[in-house]
Image (cartoon, rainbow, N blue to C red):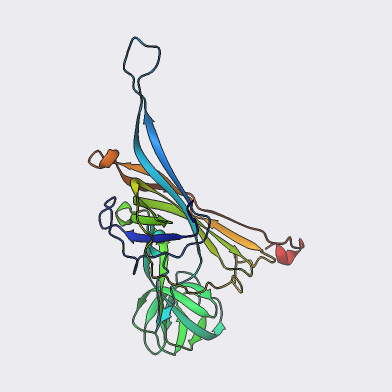
Length: 313
């Protein structure tokens, strides 16, 4: 009987979509939670030949694919110097139609006014500029940064809001969805389950995020890709990032300028639509999967508020 807790996941972005990558346990390990599901799926092609029998001719099974569901903790990859490392599930995010780029976090104090998303923030001394994204845990989160911010006064170009930077900037990865097919990456996943090696190539996927109050957040991924015949092979020993996840607290959640009260859990679903990527030059006529649509949604459970003028802008 297989010991199902003895599992190893290795994931790597494919240089050529659908072409199996060679994974390395030292660099490609992903720390996953329990509850993994691996489901092979095939298409049935019926045989329409005429015959003297009332029974149909034997059908053909083709375009076998694999669906892989797994969960990870919502956490970063740790910080080195003034840079936050990408999380170990970076490949999973990028194979869900997200593009990674750099953002900058700048710790601030003495905030006056409200910075507006999309406005330009300028450093009074350095002349550095950045596009404001959000006020997060006592700091400004920006992208498209030009120059290097210092410990200095900051001002918003549209809002006229001001703040004082109190530390050197920290670079961190951000992931944004893209609709450009040329930027959508695919992945090879190698999944070891107690000595059985399963490989999924040309994989793309979708995910949802669950953030319960006072507990670590979780991402639930579903990937689909080409099926590869499993083989017997001992589990390797991966190098894993064991950074502890933060709990969901002091989130500064606002919706339409309002701060909801008593939210016990927030859920966000990317809801990518996955379709087979047909190619008659590929094995079984399929390179893998592609993302053909996206319909994001979310939910939360705030407490009901009193129907007063203050609560009904």
